[in-house]
Length: 305
Image 1: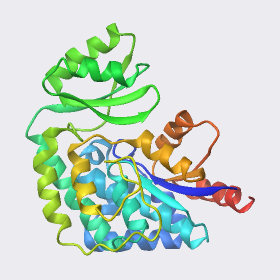
Image 2: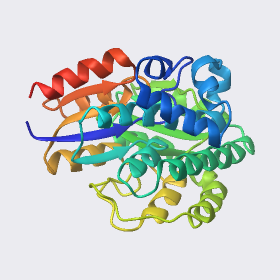
Image 3: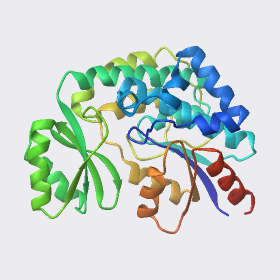
Image 4: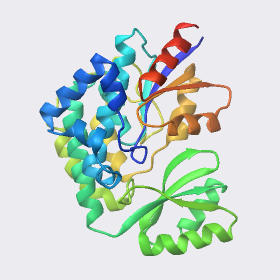
């Protein structure tokens, strides 16, 4: 077997009840939820019992997603499974950064909580959203975006899938253009034009938040959404710019594969990243951990190699 990469999902993968099975069956996961509840009361209650509407609020989504992702990661670590490199999608990059040892778990959770609050505030200042565009080449999507003042290509996910974001009134017209071009537009379960210039106020405020935290050199290779490449020592810059710039996920995955990764383990709700990774390179193996069943299946698969 080659190298293992841990990957952490982003906003949109959340669902009511996420993480509860991990908490119920794995003591180390339960302990992580308790620690986060001490920092942000009722986080586990929101994960386990919150409504879909409550979990869609960005200020709730981001700390809740981080909590579930971390609970899955520590379960594997406690079972003796480690990784050779790590990356996260959007908010998932905070979990990746934390797993790489740049900040403590408590600091990572506080950072992502502040991030969610800032991004929600920025999103609420305008009527905006996001659409996943399928079946079109990136250059075609970029060209369609150029016809609008406030529509931007933001998430380069995989071949045939590029997410755009912007003002809702412009997105409605943009979606018609996508259909006319032979593509398909799917609205995402997020409230805001994330990773666009509309998020610059949040990015600036987030940079000030990051300045308050000590950051150490990553203990394992960590890949950045902003550049699509391995981080240097510019963690604060990469994390703050990521909020208002495109996520280069396909480039991140291709860089990890080039560095030897042939097994990707998604840690957190659903298997969104597994699906994207298989579209990027069908030869790699994808596994995931979101509950005790998938934990046992992944553990068995990794230990058998």
